Image (tube, rainbow, N blue to C red; front, top):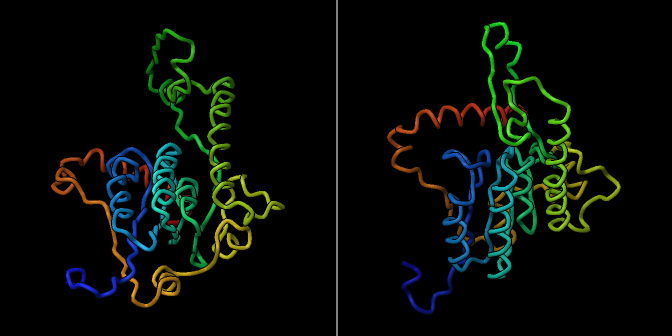
Amino acid sequence: MRRFIPFLPKLPLVPVIRLSGTIGTGTRSLNDEALAPLIDKAFRMKPVAVALQVNSPGGSAVQSSLIAARIRRLAEEKKVPVHAFVEDVAASGGYWLACAADDIWVDPSSLVGSIGVIFASFGFPELMARQGVERRVVTAGRSKSFADPFLPQKPEDIERLKALQGPIHQAFIDHVRRSRGIRLDDSADLFNADIWTGQQSVDLGLTDGVAHMVPKLKDLYGDKVKLIPLGRKRGLFQRIGLSLVDETLGAVEDRALWARYGL
């Protein structure tokens, strides 16, 4: 009702966008298509700032880049500062998202970093041979069966994967350098995919300090600051359980990513 009463000063408003989960194209994941309406809405609210609650072990480099770019673009267009608050993890793509903010705040026990690129799969050629299963592949184009999990791993496939990872890793490094600038400790090896705890990440310049969201935002914008949580709505199919197969497979992939950080 306050906004309908003339002459009353408006309370400072900070929308809070929750970025929790793995990053990818699945229905369970953080991705640009699903988050675009929330991000756009946050910056349309004429806020004094936008806050990001980040809790992600990473995932797709492309989706990480798209989400972060959208946040930065709107922040610069609207001239609105963005603050990121890390919960358990901001690793790999999760840290990519955190770097969309002007500053990053952590808990002492947060895990931060993993600035690298990974390709992981399984190989089954010996199991198939023991079961008497023959893999038959016909391709047009020598790379069409590249990294086939049912065929023995080839040295040329490994080299090609490394060649693909190099530019992606460099794009990640460039994004971090643009975001963090002179705050980074240039004497440290920050881009070898190591992870650090909260205070360690502060000491290295990867983050700005140890702080929790509510007290920090009150410190920045006053005790009357109003925080507006913005989260994704589940679709009808998700609510009534019609995407069971996708949800189950997605859960397995999610657990593998979270397990790397003991979560």
